[in-house]
Image (cartoon, rainbow, N blue to C red; front, side, top):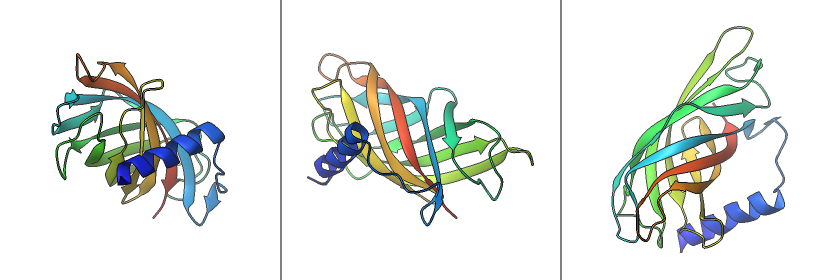
Length: 172
């Protein structure tokens, strides 16, 4: 139930362009980006637990200061962690995960690095466009995400790779 609600909120924001507060509002600095995630052993109809990690560095664009410095271009994001941390996860039930995001953003004063431990929840697989979505709360970076399946289909083969599109706020 909680994951279905989270999924509906994320899909609504993505489809209808939810309002985004200013880049340096009370929430922090707005950032968005994309990366490919690898799931091992992968999500399927059979509940499982496993690990997740970025396949290679993805991109992150921030609209305001990072560690007090203005970005001079796009940065990178990598992450790793575990899924099925409260109980085994599946495509039809959704689930939860923990991990760490590693953001590196270039500035005139040098690269700014942020490591943000997070917890995340995600909803069940949608039958439209093979999308899942959810929310993450981190020690320095909090927001929402959707992902589309790149490898697997959940029925005949587990989902082992997906493209994650995220947006959120950096905070102290």
